[in-house]
Length: 380
Image 1 (cartoon, rainbow, N blue to C red):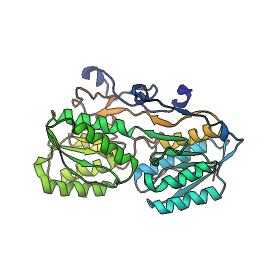
Image 2 (cartoon, rainbow, N blue to C red):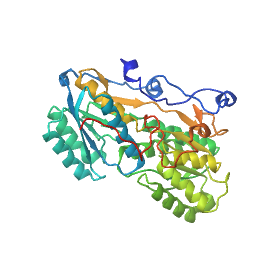
Image 3 (tube, rainbow, N blue to C red):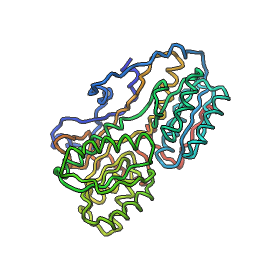
Image 4 (cartoon, rainbow, N blue to C red):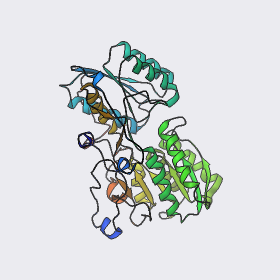
């Protein structure tokens, strides 16, 4: 069962390999087994018995999306549409709503999807607290819910498809601490306040920073996962703290790319910009390579959207599914910047697409994905 469920997973974690062997090739394929976060976990990973939801298809699936307010979310939507198109024989209709980051609208969207008689709901919550009641209500009404990307506060859903936010928080912070030799001032640039992804990553990163008395968090500013806002926030922090900033902890490449741009526009020469953490966005790793910035990259793959569709189909087929499905992700680090604890599956230099635009999301799972031209005939 594990093998079947994790067939489409990406690779995550650490590979104990020497630096010389690690970068013997420009690009590595990385680890491709089951999720290493699950293998390392000291807690149970329960599977959910879904036989009570089993029914004959084809099915009507409802997807309630928090928004498509950034390129990552556009990529996740594309992944959902692509996998729905690939499973036309099982899916009668895929109904999609967009809440434009408004929790109240998303509650209304879900109520509408329930009234339209969906067989299952896929939900990416605008905020954890605000969506909990309606997700719980759907579950009590007998409509199974698969959460993706962002969960609700309670466990009143069948499965949550994600990449490990705790792993990102711990690994990115540990890499930053060790890269700085246990001493230095860090600014934190998380995404959106109140969203489970951001808040979990902040909390777990702070747990690591707290273990090192020589590490000081100078400031924390939310960026709404916006390159433009990331740039403006970083520019303000540079004006306030200047050379006191020794590291930039970002929970995603969206604002990470903007942060590097702010350093460049402030006159920082290549090789003088402090270490930064990235995820998913080509612009963050591309700018890191071009400006010789030490960088750690751990994607939060929008391909999880397509996996959520597959999990939903398994639920309706009555197959057991994990209550939390953690996708695998390769760790990429700039050459020469591995640390004692944090090793890489591939180099940032090999992962960055220098020939592609900065706004490209690298981990949609769609070959040759281009948000400007992507179009697929999914069942509507």
